[in-house]
Image 1 (spheres, rainbow, N blue to C red):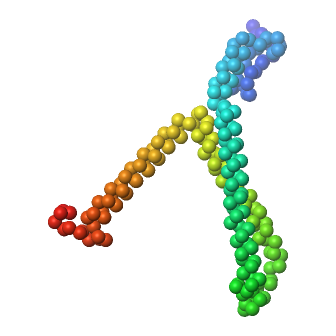
Image 2: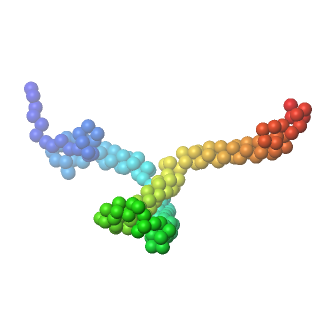
Image 3: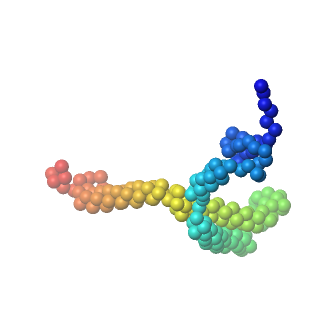
Length: 191
């Protein structure tokens, strides 16, 4: 004897295969306790990986400060360089009017405003890229999930830096005491 189910198939999740499903006369009236507990456990498991508000604030703070100083220092380089080049053209240090290629210089009048656009977009793109890189590094340090890995990497970098500094110092001291250029100072003692 075949029976026909005349109820609803209820899903708690995104799709049929990765969610909790149950059958009943209606989904709202027949929500099982198991579904509620599973949903709370799933959200709790995901919530432990969410960044804390303090790590987000630290990342945004470093990002804003980095963006400001990157834009400021790039402007300090680009704007005086453009003004300096213009002054060289006006005073004749760069020979434009008396140059044998003067007609070639006059050919691209539509590129006159290219420098202003290059200055604007250059400053903007470098600011965005440097800010993104700094925010990524600061977030990796501030996020409690990646912090142990970053601490391990930083410990290795510090250990390598100490080792290399000690090696260079010993080689410099011993090398200065025993060698003059590529020649040994005291042949019998250095062997």
